[in-house]
Length: 161
Image (cartoon, rainbow, N blue to C red; front, side):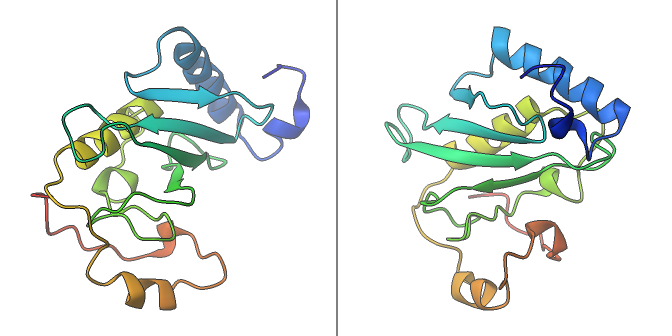
């Protein structure tokens, strides 16, 4: 990413741009274990490779997260979804939407993308079953036209999976 790339900053505030540049540099020097950032010239949209933790249901599996940072990041949470194919997990819908409180209600500006990624990896690692959410088909039916997962009213009631 170059600092002269104005097209990547068009929708970001100065605070968001500064914060993302700092996080980008941190990812280049020491990314969280199990993650790899695919570098592009777009500061607002990152692709993160997620590697399943050995000894878990997702060992030796690799997935891609798409992260879109909003104009007012970090005051507003980024949108994080799995690209196709999404892992089979009770809190990950087949369209890639993730039911995880830190992406929505529990977001704090003090959080960073690395903390979100570690929460996602923890969620995957602690799962005892590989299955779609029970309401997957209903959710997909009501989530047409590329609706953002941030428009969903999530119910965070199961922290055991």
